[in-house]
Image (tube, rainbow, N blue to C red; front, side, top):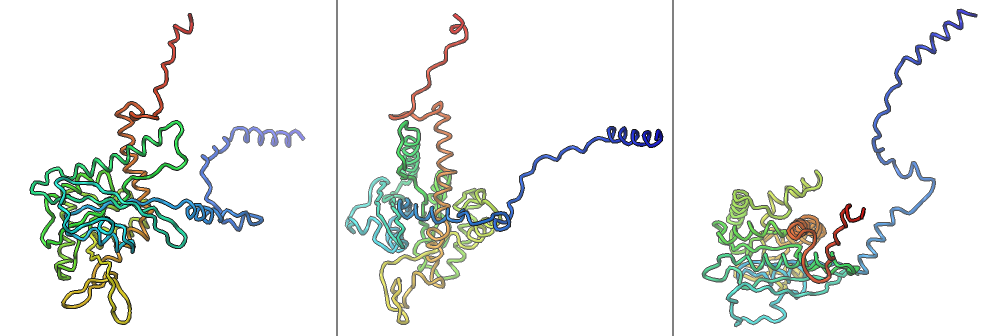
Length: 356
């Protein structure tokens, strides 16, 4: 008995001496398959349908700016892009209208509905840009307008009694029209994109691409991409904002092959092989706007509307607007000046005063 007791005692002593293993740090568990955990249907998957219904009720905003010299077909392209008369030329444009002496900003709003979804589209035109003998700093009114929209949104955000839905007039996309010279970018093109790429999503496009041969077009596209890279100009979609490998793969293809989009715009229809198509009539035939072998308009439309529209809005809000907001709040000690802004908090009494 004493021997057995001694053995048991030894076991106890040894177990007391052996250090217990340290617990591993808690690591978030990977989500398991829903079907293997739930005993019945909950309805989590209906959140997508709920969001869809709400969006269809409220609609959404999209604000697009067009910048480029006169005569590059900006108004026609926008009308073609949204298949409606949304640009300023259709509203109150006169061919005898004089070119503005300075850059003007004209915004025209429309409500477009498709499949029950409403979109409040605002087209911001910039007549007078690049049309003067001296175009020095002609991008400044455009940059000022973009920043004013950020300021307007910021002031609404910091109001004590702010609106349930703040009107969004911020520029989500800027289509920059490059003249189809076939040679190189003008100094004005480089200066504009260098300044504005920091505050807005710039999508460069080569206008009136039908004035170049296929070889000239490909060479010009490559030359433009090279010049933008050499000058450190980043256009949308910016490399640094790719969220994952899938985004990077998709956007790399766009950056390296499609940009800048070489496009042709037209709001006229012609009969081609028994079908009505949008196109431009020339002595040698019809240039079909939506035919990829003729121009890259379809790629531009898919990019701006069908695949990247929401991302354009998110980059505007999360990157460009946040950069502006952080700078303004930092410069003004917390809040921007203006009516409806929270007043500075009263200074707390010092401990000595409290003690007395």
